[in-house]
Length: 511
Image (cartoon, rainbow, N blue to C red; front, side, top):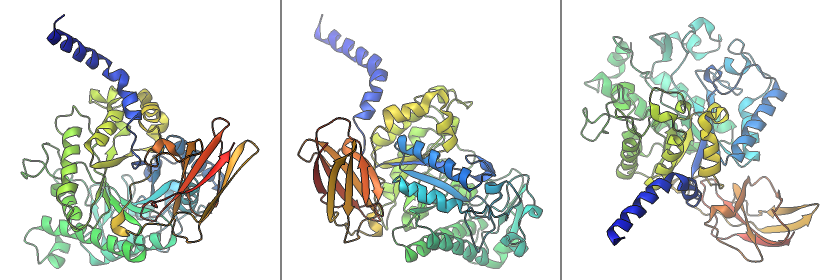
């Protein structure tokens, strides 16, 4: 056989075997830092049933978080303000009806956010508190369904109706101030890692209907020739002011937004994406995502690229590259992390037949890694991981998220490296190894625990050596190694902004 023919045969064999090797390739390229988050949507009880008492709710939280940890997720995006309400005791908003299933304002008798946060941190999982700023009601609700203490009932002049829903008027300074205060209350009272907003700013447009804020524009928009520019500025100001308020209180708390997946179509703007989306952030939702990146008023952006790699109107691969260019080109004040919103809800259930391939979403994650700029993903939503249509969630667990990953750091919020733990003791007893960790300098928010076979340290950059991440208020850790032998444990400190100490404190244990 001639050399040229041999090459052709090899190429054909590689092409045929590529699907078989996909899992092996992904497992061998595990990143040490990667956002792996699940959205937990409480609005309309998408991911959380209503009416649980404290014991039942706590049990649900524990089993949910245990499952996510087993799947190597490191973050939950918990929806704590589905509308102008709260899943925590608040002086500014009534209790959400989605926790009790009863009238808005009904006290469940416990703190859902407090329990979720405590249980998440027990498992080394971060919590981003997800809030929706302007939405007052969902379809099918009226203002009569609101608690008397709801700000929309107390200030009806702040409220506009559009379609079948009610919204706070984004152009009113009083509304802006109220929304800032709700975030300040949340950050002050809870040790969360981030405040998170999704794609609901000005509402998605309804054909033939204008958003009824003309009177507000005439009163406050004199500096703007176009109402559209004024609306975008209203959102820009809210984003900037919320971020400033957060950082003034706790500099390490992040502010992230997950907008609709298309900023502008190229037909409207030569710097837009090669897409033909029916609505876009800039032109329809008045959310100028590029401006937030320029201003450094967000720490991360998670565009909801909820389409397949074969979808012509909004192709996943095209948008992945476009958003990567955005955070590379326009992050003037500080870097902005790019995460990708994943359409788990479309797997096995969409008109686009590509979603009936169980590897479509897992391979999108591999594309994110290969892209190099994207630093992880957020999955919509929790129930899809449980439903596991077409076995896609098993593929994520067995082939994609095979090792523990740390969340990406945000050094621009504080660059100081933490000190390694002061002391680590190890003792083998009763079929396990107990580590006792001492941190007299109190510079750590978390500890990363590495385990190496034998009497020497191994590679701290290899995530396969990470056995767990624990919060620093845990002063001990119990490990059960796979076989008897000598092990070296290394424990590093992680700062509030995710920076890891240069060195580890080590201990050798005979198990």
